Length: 459
Image (cartoon, helix red, strand yellow):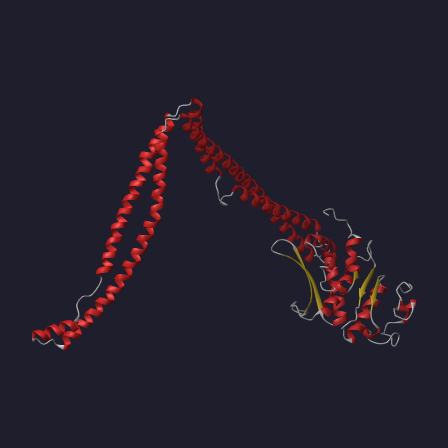
């Protein structure tokens, strides 16, 4: 809710003062808050003394931006065009198509097909014929080229043979020197290498020529069909057939214009939605600045709620572990608050990483008690419940934790814990540091109804 109470609400705070084993995995993000961050971060910000209204408004703007992104995506699909399509350009195309429609409609209205005949003649003479002529010329040129390539490939052979020449010289009674034979063989080998390279090039060129000829054939066939259609239009004496064709063109143009109008409307909506998105982003930036400033002020101001919780949190951990702990709030790059609780050294560097569940549990207990102490003089719960607080702690830390719980009980709070006998640092009432019998409000066991929580009968 955007209307946060002056004090934290009972229903929200219960998750922090009633912790079961499953609630120790994170100090701040409880099991009941497994949804979006807006369901728990504003409350936690208010609990720590920050201006939670800023965080609520930030998440409202995030939701608004997501809605705008969805709307933009919807209109982009409806427009069916590129993201950067221009509304003005579409207006120009619509105007052109509208003028074409007016011309064809005028032909239908006056039943005068002279203009339609003239345009068909112009298409035939200036367009179709030129394309057919160009296509035929290209086909002829490619055919001639293909013939020359085939001839070149067939003639590409070396007819000179040194061995036959040597035999011919011997028959004539003339000596054929070995060096001359060797030179001829090297020359032939050289020419053969050059011929192979030339042959590869010719084969590649022949393949490209054949592919272009294959592609050109359907193009020419299509142009021939179009020419035949235009001749039929010009030569047809049936006025009704011409009227039908012009009517079909009118219908087609109207459908195009209707599609362009829808596209134009979608693009226009996208422009407006992006303007709204920029405004939302600007408000988010202002809110992020305000949140950052609020965190800075609360961190620098001594004695406020945030600083008190930090102090009590550190004191509890230090009293139990003899180490310091830091509770901190930062602002993420998106503007949302990030909450952190960790054990640190004297320089502020985290040392609790990898220490496991036991230390995380102690941080949860320390945070809950620190919050209760900070709100001690206000209308706020004054009790806490923590399940299994002593599990895995070493004996010295257990004794120190008992001392802290007693200290907070003396302040007027009521820390309630559960533990197994085996987890106690020492037997009940065995020493001044041990838990006293008077501090045990209920002992559960399996020996009869007295050992059950509400003394119920077995079933």
